[in-house]
Picture 1 (cartoon, rainbow, N blue to C red):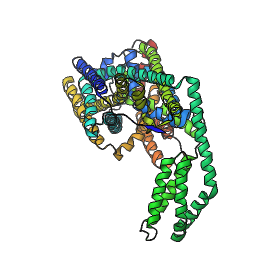
Picture 2 (tube, helix red, strand yellow):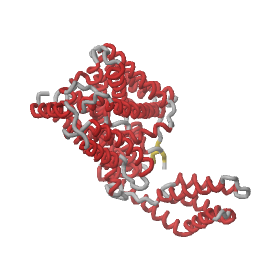
Picture 3 (cartoon, helix red, strand yellow):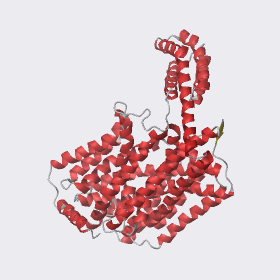
Picture 4 (cartoon, rainbow, N blue to C red):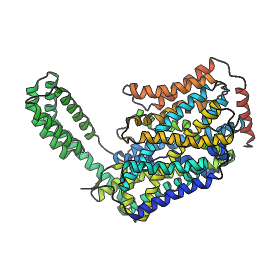
Length: 602
């Protein structure tokens, strides 16, 4: 079986990527002259049409996960990994349905809020700036790491595609994003998102169609996927039968000897275990892991005549790794099943990803900038159509990738690179360049949106509202562009270490924003009785529960941390709000928003 790798690329790819970068920078320079004040820099003067708003919201949401992570997950495990895509689609639709109109009206009629912290402060008459400060800090901390993860993904794409040094790749990718965001602000980000969104969707339509043609049609693809599952499950059966012979007995004897500190028994059984691991590397679905473990066992065996001090730790680690590899190799596959090996909690966890949309600042800010609430139904149709087509296309890339691999007896070095490899294998180099530009677009659209939200937090929420309340629009614009540079520099600094452990915090960011901001946004738009302290309690509770559950309680209750975070934040909002009166002006502002909702003049 041949293994497909990312190939070296020539002039057509360089030229296409270069043209793409020039277009993105050109858009930024074009909107530089059209951006005159902070509202235009951060919200485009609330003049965005439905198509731009919808595709910008979608493109800024779907990062490289859409073209790499999702196809890779479908390739490995099938439709059970489509639950996240279903949850995201539901969440985005509910976001447009419930949040878009009310947030657009409220942020204009009540003190013309242009950032999310701005909205929270005016919604709850927070004259002490506590909500603004908390939300601004949360946005800044989470988004700096979010941006850096995007920069790392872009740099790795350049590194793997062009074989350019990682640090140089990082400077190229970051430079393109920073230039068009620095000059053009929100208008440039939205219009580049529009082009990037169209490019991403077209790529996810074209690549599966060509793959399907190569495979021979839907029925052929289905039969090859089922054949792959049959071969995999036959190996699972063989592995189980082999383990039930003497292997489990050998492992049990070694584990017991390990507990009794009996080196002689371990020395007697280890050669047989090594032989068994080598056999498992030949008959199981996990050859690389078992081969590696056989080598580790051989190294340990060579030291048993004169055992080192840490021999117990090494043996324990080996046994633990063998258990993990064995468990992984015993998983049966049914790529067309939504429920194979899936628990209720895992389905709830996947669908709960949709809750995150209510609190993602770089997405809900699109609702604040749309030209009119009358455009929202059209934007919803465009946005949801784009999202569903793109998600289905990504799922097809993963599933058809398995069919393609089975038909031509090949494998992929990394399933997440299916889109890249198929683009190189099936298309003319010039077309490949366009398709790979779609992957770069997915990365850049998300990073640029997050960069702009982070810059608005520094310029509007710290500088203008707290540090220098009498700042002129010109001063705020200068500080806004400076903030783009500062935030991007910090994110760039973190990104220089592509294996930085700091980036593990990104795993919490979606759940953190969804649980803390999402609950506050929903209650603030629909519950008149909500108070300032209720908002503060909900925001803090959501963020804290997400971190605590992920680090300490997931083992006991294996559900995505956004679920307990969102529930606990909601309870905190209700309880604390009911314990105190609503601040003067807050109820009147809510009533004014409801009046405008019915009037439909905005």
